Length: 121
Image (cartoon, rainbow, N blue to C red):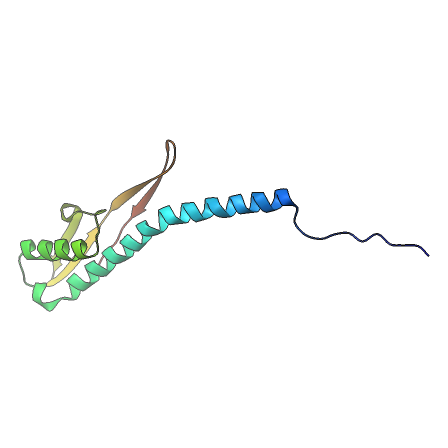
């Protein structure tokens, strides 16, 4: 009788270590990048809430800025200051928008630069 060779299927130890390394690098990258996207979503939500607030439609700019400061403080948002927010009144409605960058240090002198453009639209 002839015996047939049976090949083993699976991952070698080196392949397992390399796969784990790639998985860890992707996880670390995600843990650094995801908070910036979460803050951008919170800023967009704050803009929409302020634009929809009937009490702020005819209010002075100082009151709108104070409302943003308070809401950003509650959400612990330090990426965007009120001085960088563009506030327009168009026919009695508020439109808030901004353009800001977030620098995320990765490794050594490598930095990731993210650009965000939230608005109340």
